[in-house]
Image 1 (cartoon, helix red, strand yellow):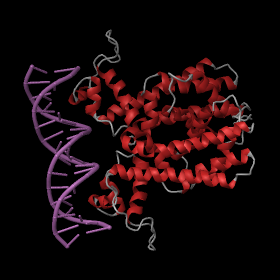
Image 2 (cartoon, chains in turn red, purple, blue, green; image 1 turned 180 degrees about the horizontal axis):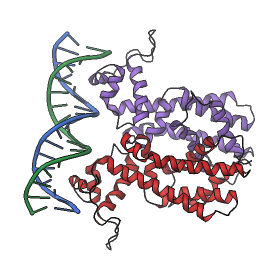
Image 3 (tube, rainbow over the protein chains, first blue to last red; image 1 turned 90 degrees about the vertical axis):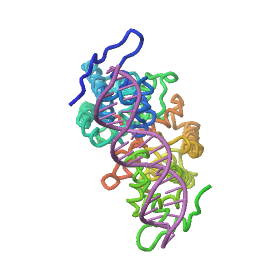
Image 4 (cartoon, rainbow over the protein chains, first blue to last red; image 1 turned 120 degrees about the vertical axis):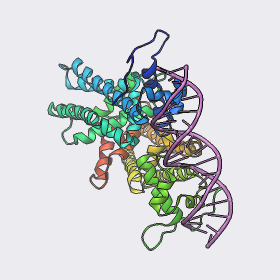
Length: 205
Length: 205
DNA sequence: GTCTATACCACGATAGAC
DNA sequence: GTCTATCGTGGTATAGAC
């Protein structure tokens, strides 16, 4: 059973979230940067400005904390996909695809470290955490598979390339950016266009 | 100072390497699977068939063990690049590129878990380990950058795409495969051709 | 809701017998 | 070259005061 969460998602006037929300933000950043196992609760608490024991008022365990972060990361991705879908429902297939690529990348960089932490820590997350989020993760991947299938049925995606393979290499290109893309220095739109361009026509001169 | 390494790289007749070599193999697999921090020396020792303390005869510390593994992974990649280069020195640019993609992927899957472990654990490796291998890592990346530059000078790679970006998305596609590619079930050659095809012409119908 | 204090355990690492 | 035994540290987690 979960702890009672007082004032969930409330923002303080003094600039920045408090309590549970702030723990999530800080922990997601640290998990992203150092990895789950290498980040101690003492570090998280210290960065938040409290003591390690106090974290247990908000989360039952370190695993549950990670689970909440990865869950939110997945929620953001799914929501981004839905918005892209709604915004381009009647557009031509390539416009739809471009919007989804843009949405995926935006979710990786514009919604805090949750999504990026999902990409980097899912691999080595404890089994209980993986089991808790794998269902939604599979659902998100299925959305992309379905999108690609539609593109193939529309005749814009080559029909001799396995859809699963296309999705995996596309995800590889997009998700690897969490290791190097710096949105202070690079333009997200240009990056999204580059990914889209590579997917359709490649980089041939 | 390093421990003396008796019989380095020797293979026993009884099937499989012994001593130091066997520790490296086992540790690389476990680091790849669970991550560096989450893998204990006791686990490694147990999988090798010895006790934790005995590992210190072969390696000065856990960090040094990881460093040796990542170093070897990088060595394999560099060697694979060199072989591809030598084999296609007089070939046309696209054949050269295809050979390098094939060599990179082959190195990820045909030379034990060293290269794959490099991909997955470098991100969160301790600073001392990163510093020890970052030079060779940078050199490997520079080889690819130089290759892409030559392709652009040859007029086969579009000149309006930043070379660094092309390399990063390409690496993203290739390296993400350590998370899902199973060479028991998939054909490495087909995968390599798919990556090459995506890079040049994309998946447009 | 956060604190102090602490239990309990697993970890990396060392020493010395064999 | 591997063992046993152990040290010291730092981890997660809990209990109870405030």
